[in-house]
Length: 179
Image 1 (cartoon, one colour):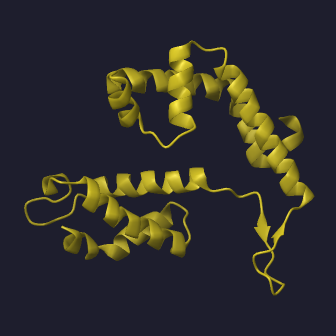
Image 2 (cartoon, rainbow, N blue to C red):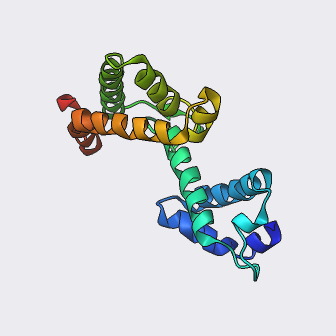
């Protein structure tokens, strides 16, 4: 199965590049995708059609989820100074400090909102937003249907978007003082 997937390696890399990744990150994500497919996909029919043609949508969704997980875990508040001999020296500028402080204020607002919710919604949202658990993992662990958890999370995200969407846009635009 991996041999068949590897034949389209360049296509998979182009998909990840199209999501906004650099070449190094794209290569890493594609390699990780191979490992993930090998580990979790036991039924080849999920990703291979009769003529050994690959289900590109399945691979795209896998790559997209992996790329989003990568972006979610990336901490971008520091820059590396490349004009000195020690390339690992971190420079902490005032603009980065402003960004970090605004981000912390933003997260605190979300936490304060979530603390007003019923325990079910609060625990569910914290599990999903602050950990690596997928909705499916939460459903299995809690013994609750995936549909129920999906609907609850959709409603919770809608509330957060309505209350904090403008703050998020301010953060992305660099208007840190408005948060």
